[in-house]
Image (cartoon, rainbow, N blue to C red; front, side, top):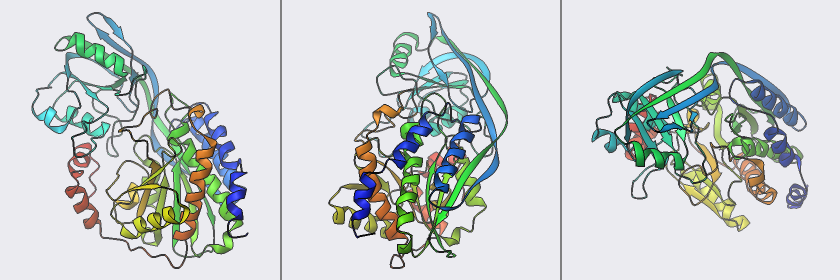
Length: 435
């Protein structure tokens, strides 16, 4: 194919975009459900059109399916939804609003036997993001009876997002999400008063699956290009992460036409069960010789804004590759050298494998429509998908070239970076510190 003909071809292609539409039309791609299995099967079928050895790898997970959620206040009920992997339980306690739920907020407040509410954001002046699970496990550690997670975006949208960890996949105290508006009403009216939270959920054994396919020469070393196919049950999962999986399919389609340009095997993986604790990628990383992985390009959260954003985890060669790409195409890409621990690259990067977390630069702190009822197909643009596909196809091709070199680092280097960036405390309290 001529030097730039593939770009014109890509801008006329609907393959990836149509796969995105296919995924969002699958009802409920929650980990372990029939919908997730259908999404994986359809993705395997899509990759089989362009890549070799398209296959499914099944593995066991802790299943969790949503039942009813009740929040009772002295003035009646309030709307909310259970956070995935919340235990089925009902508790009563005094209501304590901890604002942003920063570590120091918990240190300064007695929350024993309380039902604690925290916001989904952190203040502008704080030097790092504090993840939902970190806030949850501070509440667990300090003896809270229940956990309420309030969205910081307007629109009457309660947020979802899992609790639990690898050792104990079901959380210890019931956890619910409420909208910004419900959170404001709870804060204004019921601080210090007794409220009741009840969660019903079906907890059972289940299975999930990763989808694999390959292109390029059969080299010992390989480049992983990844996404996750599962989504939360309350929405279509268009941004998180149907678009990422659709992009993997589009990259495979374009590179199949340029396969003779690949010097290194490109291994496409779309993981299952990401939303409940990176289970699929952890399974894959544990069963793979990580020394054979040149790098991982993990795509999670693209298309929701026009400019790509990548975390490079301190790997200078990865940062340079993105900078060169942006300059060559005259198209901005936002880069962050810090660690990013909450997507499917992390089970590899934590052990020193070079990796990208590719998402979108939204200009906002937090997930926006993600993890809410609002994560729907209509909010994404085909133009943005195609523009980002051009950049990602070329990035993958360059990383697969013999002229590209990036070295693995010792896990001690990653651990030190987490300590320096003040991320270690959160991973430790969650129970995800691997060192």
